[in-house]
Length: 312
Image 1: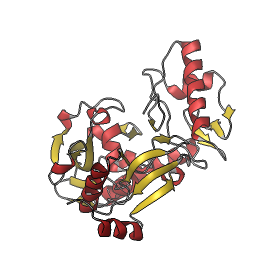
Image 2: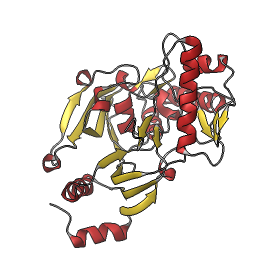
Image 3: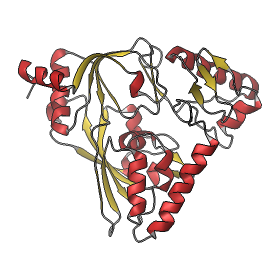
């Protein structure tokens, strides 16, 4: 059903739906302009109703998760921005190793839960400040592991047809054309609602928790966690490493406005205070231009940009 005036009023009063909300606090870079409409549904029925309402009103709809791989323009976003971070929860079977997690479930939370049950396969995810849905779309990875290695399937809905959203479609791993930080989900209008993983059962929980803690410690000591960032900005142009290429050009510490190429890790751009989305975008462009000029290598970002005319 479409949202009536009373239902719309109820969602506004509950805070689930808001107008003209700054999106800076919804990205890990802490930048971004206002959303015309912002909604944070708690369940799939609210999500469906909001999508139908947006269709009725002729509003463009975008979906975000934890905002950890996202750069939102300073001008903000028109239409309806749906944030999935409240759509959380997971089911883990210690005997079979099967795991189902909703799209908004934080990866570090799922990683720790799996380790406590002796389920091997997600230890690498403990330091990634993203959600399950985002990981499935981007094929997130770290510490030599990746989403594609343990993901069995995703449950998706078609954003182009809100009238059919009461049913989900299951896509298996083989349907998604996974590659390094790539999947077919990135170019489709199918939204991941949940993901199913096949982990290895029967491992020693103490060993897995030790490995998980070690992975987190390594990330926090080798990456600039004290400043807002999106994590790694550029994909590694294998066999080269993006951070090494940038560091070799002496670009560590280079600033534009409040955005800085981290002195700790050159593949991180950090907000050292007062950065704008344009500052970050211009620093990304600078790095790409310099690496191409000197090394003849085109660096591609892991970051999704929203609200920029050339990339949106």
